[in-house]
Length: 97
Image (cartoon, rainbow, N blue to C red):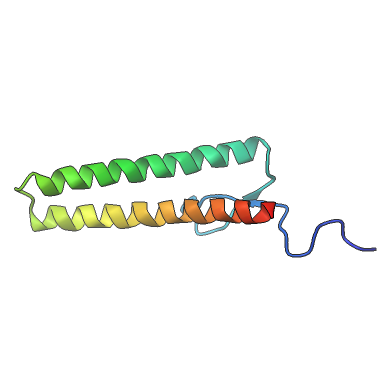
């Protein structure tokens, strides 16, 4: 019997990373998917706040080397998480085609 799922299309939605190193999936449109959307929005909100804090720290003029290293580390983490959100959203857009 042939599958009713179109070839090459995933029926599951990949969720944002939770730090465990494991990839999570959920059904699109359900309660867990709604929670995943909230997680994505939180990741983007944190990235915006980290960028604002970094800019404020750098422009204050009396920033130590240690503080700059720390702010760069936070920005790297936030940037990676925001890129993952963008990739997740692209996957969902691609699935619509």
